[in-house]
Length: 250
View (cartoon, helix red, strand yellow):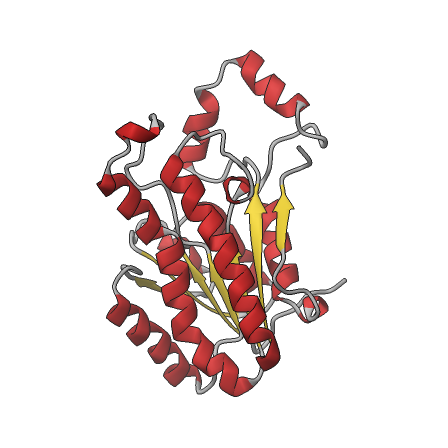
């Protein structure tokens, strides 16, 4: 199956490293006209060098998001074809009993996950409706469909919220030719944070994790990027409202 995105306008959020960068690189290799952003510029230059258009942007700023999406539509003269809501993260949340979770931890994680996915989706949907087509892929997590090994209450709640948002948008937007799906990655060595997390495990704990995975290996960013591109493609035109676990089997 040859998946191409020639002459397609693709937007990826949270692209400086990890899954966002690899997803961006795969879209560029498949011919996409790529626009991506991150709140941190370090790493975006890698995507720029490969042909993507990058911006430093705080996606919790509603006006900045509207201006960014509007600028892309004006520059290209058309609606955005594909949106990948990849931006997210833990913020400063720490594993702790629920009675010790602070309002600040909760609010930051919610703002960086479902709030951003909602805000960017809200900005691109009017153009997609006018075009009568579009693809939105929301990055959730294994923590979006079950209790999380991270033991982070805000993060698990936030990723569950992204799953709910995905299903609600899919129900509304299908009539306009727009599909909305979510990718739920398992544990993937994708950036400095996940690598440091993995290295905190003892060799025995690492081996136990691998053995508990059907495929007997941990994930690679390409595993997630490949599913994302498939859901964004014409081949996935009758798939919507779905949450696809990409976790090697658990």
